Structures are given as structure tokens and as C-alpha cells.
Amino acid sequence: MSNSPTAVVSGSEQDLWNGGVSPLNASYGKLMMWFFLLSDAFTFSGLLVTYGLVRSAHKAYAGAVDAFSFSHAYWPIPEKVFDSVPFLHGVTLPLVFVGIMTFVLIMSSVTMVLAVEAGHRMDRQAVEKWMLWTILGGITFLSCQAWEWMHFITGTDNGTVIKEIVGGEWITKTIYGANLHENQYGPPDFADFFFFITGFHGFHVFSGVLLNFLIYYRTVTGRYERRGHYEMVEKVGLYWHFVDLVWVFVFTFFYLV
Amino acid sequence: MEHSHEPQVTVLPPNKEKIKKLWTVAGILGVLTIIEFIIAFSVPHGSFKTFVFVVMTIMKAGYIVGEFMHLKYEVKVLFWSILIPMIFVVWMLVAFVYEGMKISDVHF
Image: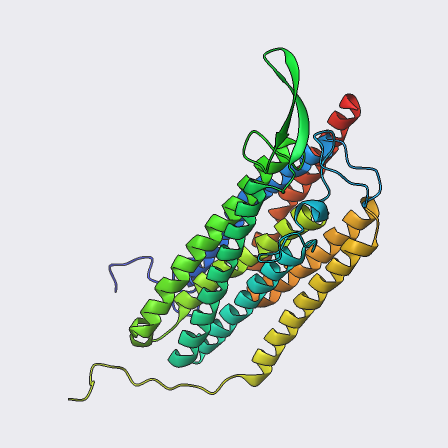
């Protein structure tokens, strides 16, 4: 093309930044997914760091773990708040249920990465199989979280007796469970952060399940086979692993520390 | 009628080595989580416990991002352009938690 003065000489340094080669050796879609995840990481960091600020501004519980009781005076210790498992009412099993949830999410991350591996080999049946397991893991996690929320909102059998000022007078009352302005487990801020952080994460899991289903559907209908590659599985896989990654942090800072 | 419009696809056999490695990483993540559980019930609450948990969480995050998300094997420019902005998060965390402790000092 003699009328094009900026004609690209193939193989030269020039076409590196002119669309000839991807400078980061990743496709546009994958790169944008990475940058989206980076921005999403900032959002979650914002939530978790604010949680850290508010938590460290409250008094920590200093007594023995066995003598712990719920109070607005200090931040609760997590193993006393999250100690229930479905169908085992009255049995104290600290952190067991959230451990199961963590296990489910890690496993679904493994099945996702196996789906990506199958996609590299153009193995449609294996992609279908592993995507189904991943979707199942996601739905299981969401169901567990729904139960966890329900339990957190409903509260314990006996509730917690609190004193508060209503209309200028101190009154004593028993409250059960938590919502955005009352919390039997500790300071109201604790419940607010619980709802916002696990809720925002749960919303990500929910979106991930929808995306996973979309990918599964398109695999089954053969769209990626016709396209010649399964890169969409990789991109949605990145998102799904990110959801798992966030849970690792939520698990540590909400349930363990 | 044959599906003449369907492309011919060559399915490669499973990459056993790679799959084995992925399960190894999954195993490491599982073991780290179990150790976290043991620590949660055997070490008293305090800054040492928090420190151990933070280190273990970063280890888990490293395995997830490096192996599952494949970032370890991407081009170095991509690797660092994802990792370096995280400095802001570290800064924010240190600044805000320090601020929170000062607020606590004023209140109690």
C-alpha cells in the first residue's frame, strides 16, 4: 500500500503498539477482566478496611472465651456468634458451618479451573461436566449463606438484654437477632458490616452463578466449539476465582480474627 | 444429512501433569484452611493470632491468584500492573486501622 505512510512492517518493533501483537500477551477481553477485577478488589478493600477501622475503634473483648456473653460494650468474638449448623439446633459447633461454606467455594474454584483446562483441549464434554459442578458449588454456597443470614437475623433462643435510651429514659429490653439498627450479638456496626460485606460478596457469587450458567449453556449449544476456542470459560473463570479470593479474606477477617 | 457446518474438532487428551498440579494446589488450600481452624481454637485472641491469620490468608490468596488465575505465568508487565496498585490497599489498611486504634484510645 503505497498510499499508507504508516504501513506496518510485520515483525518489527513498531507493530507492538499498533494492534499487531498484544503487548501483555493477553487478549483484550482477558486484560479487561483483569482490570475490572482490580477495581472490584478496591471496592472490597474499601469495605474490609472500613470494617477494620470501625472494629479497631471499638473495645475488644478481653475476658476468657468461656465467660463471653453478648454485649454492646465490646466487639464480639466470632466463634461465639457463628456457632450453629442447620438441623442441629442447640448444639454448639463454632465456625463449623462457615468452614463447610469455605470448603464448598474452594472446591467450586477447583472445578472451574478444571473446566478451563478442558477448554484448552477443546473437550466439550469435560467442560460441560466441570461447569455443572461449578454451578452446583455456587448454588450450594448461596443456599448456605441464605441459611446463615436467616439464623443471624432470627437470633438465639434467649436473645440479649440491652439497655438503651428511648425518649430520654433508660429502658431495658430483650432483642433477638440483628438488623441494620439493632444487634443482639454486639455493637450495631458489627451487624451492618456483616450484612454489607457478606451481602456484597453473596451478590458477586450470585452474578457468578448466572455467568457460569450462561457459559455452560453456550458450551452445550456448541457456540465455543464453532468459535474454535473456549476463552470465555477462562474469562468467567477469572471472575469466579476472584469471588473465591474475596471469600478467603472475608473468612479471615470476619470469622477467624 | 451430515452436520457439514459443524467444524472438525480435535480433542486433546487430558494434561495429567497439569491436572495433578491443580489438585495439589487445592490440597494446599484445604490444608491451610484446616490449620487456620486449629489455630482459631488453640491460640488466644491477640495481635499474634491476627498476624498469623493475615500471613496465611496472603499465602492462600497467592495460590489462588498465582495458580488458579494463572497470573504467575502471565507476562511480567501484566503481573506487576495488577500487583503494584495493591500498594494503595496496604497503605489504606495501615492508615485506617491506626486511625481506628486512636479513636479507641480517645473513647476508652
